[in-house]
Image (cartoon, rainbow, N blue to C red):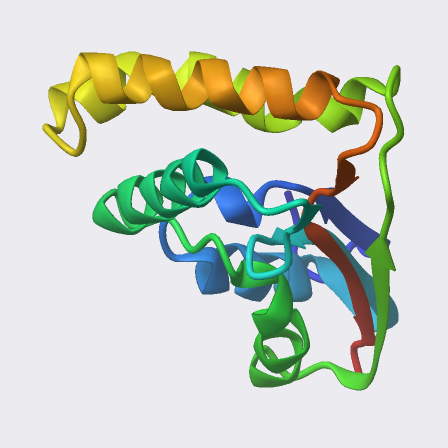
Length: 165
């Protein structure tokens, strides 16, 4: 792709899955023309609100964050978006936070169970928790999320964008 060829470059939930997200932001900035916009939508794992509290849930969240960190992944990349955009040379950086409560029946309500299933083998192989403790935590979380009285606000999403001068 030619440098400065595009009016707009965007990515959604890419940076949270890769080491060195700054490199992607830098490349996106190089691809847009002067006056062009780079826009990103990322997650920040720093905001999870659940009520009532559940120790198994806190244990799994900590495991996911620790696993990510050990593999060079920044679970809190959303909060860094504005800074990364400015560091890449963009101006007029704007930010929009998005937080949603997921009622019973909404598929996003169970997203942490999907993460638990997807990461199970890797987390166990890393020796971060025993098989039985992991399975007990996941089972407790499933019961908790199936309770309609449990408040589930999963993750904060951050949208940020800036213009290339």
